[in-house]
Image 1 (cartoon, rainbow, N blue to C red):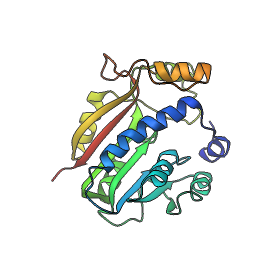
Image 2 (cartoon, rainbow, N blue to C red):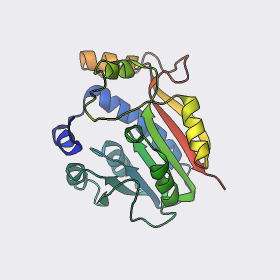
Image 3 (tube, rainbow, N blue to C red):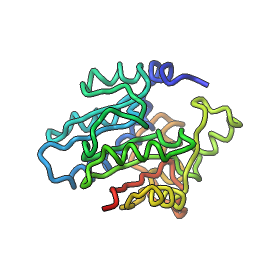
Length: 225
């Protein structure tokens, strides 16, 4: 198992990953636009390389961007682009209640066996009018098949995937209002071709017949009033 510090020190964005980042960015911007404020406070939890929070910071002038990770290597990288970068446990931050208009994570929640502590913390720092977006691996895709080939010896240790039904249940049980669930890359087909040939293209297929048949699912929620 590789440490997150070592992983981020060696990380390079592939064309397939760049496409996935762009797809996430479209969803994030759609919800940022819904916030009626001239200065929208946004945080990426588990920022890693900081690709999406950097895109937001570089392309919008109505946001105040923050990043958080528990990897020092990650924060050292991201702090050059996002000065408000914080080294912390995502389950216990020093932010005050109701701080952020948008709280989001990508590729983080699946590494926790118990999601409740982190969901409670993200809910605490989210404004009552804000949105929380979580990008996680979907249950049925080529990506999941690739993981199975490792026979449990995945490079980051524990990781799971989610069905839409499981996501709805998890967030409703933790007192969130589910706005929508969005799928990115049906069955990982587009990302697989991009990786195989190292190309970037407009996707062939955008929707899956199976609700959980994507590379990623994005669940968008709000606090229950």
